[in-house]
Image (cartoon, rainbow, N blue to C red; front, side, top):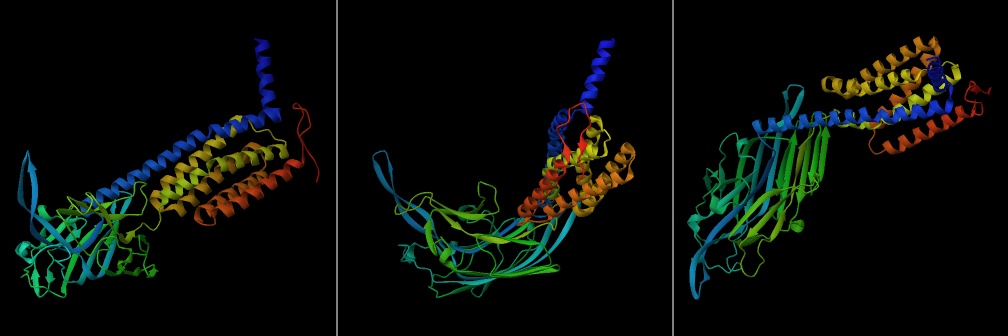
Length: 484
């Protein structure tokens, strides 16, 4: 029993006084503390995913993201198709469609955005008044190899695409030529967009040089408002009361102004970048939303043609470019909290190094269990940051969590070392660490530069202080600090 006690006390004495062994154990402890820091990062992502699901749920109840396209004039015509059944050839009459896009399209959108609350989560939703006007050019039947006798003018349709039809606050009135029409929802046989408003214009078959149109949509939506480039010339004017818009898509505004009270933006989009023809023929066509496989914000809309004539390939795809406005939350505290958590290992290592130098300089031993308690306090810091940021915002939460953690560790060291001045100096060092991380989090383009400079200065200070320590003493002796 005595031998075992002596062995235990000898091992404890060696662990507490051996510089080499203690540095190794401190490094191992810092690596072990990465496990709970990774769990904190997972918790942040879980809360972020919860926020996204709540925002999506609010969007489903209010109305989803809106995509506006069109109008597209759809003119059906009869054609004879040769079919072979066994050895018998016969001609069958089928109906195909001729699609005509506008020459000019002018869109004026005015949005009123607000936040809907559900628990601690917020979702940006909007109400928009969108005016669309423009004109169609002449329909070239000869180019489509269609005779006037083949055209079914009484079945012509005008289609307008709306991303979420539930967002329409009332039934719009569409003016085509000099006639006003009340649209209905999609006709299955001539569907152009994923969600259609369709009206049956009265076309007499007389050729026209231009066919003007106009309509106004009162609709609701969430997250984003997008427009499709379908006309030869597209002009979009958008304004709203949201101070944090994001303009995205294939085209950015030619003019923009963003203020705290709102924004204004204008797009001028010519047809040179449009891959759609001005008119085409197909058995059916569908313009629907597609998202890049990598999940980026580079959205675009695709037009898929099926059952093409012999002269064109089947399943040919053209792109109708989308662009618009995304209504972002002013501050995403989850992203900032996650970025802060990624620096956990840096804070832990720097704190342990500073604590070790404090131990050496003051010649007061700090037990490895006390290192563990200080490391636990630094891990709990991130849960404090996350929980408070959901309530009071990231900046205030960062201040609360940092002050609480620094005060806790500083008070613990004051009691442990019985030196208030040393505890205050160590608290000041921790304050510099947390302020340094906060500055990096706030920066975007300059974060790498400032972070590299800060780490270089830190390493230089460590080299300076380590040079004042006599590391050549035996492990059983106290490490001496050389006079400057």
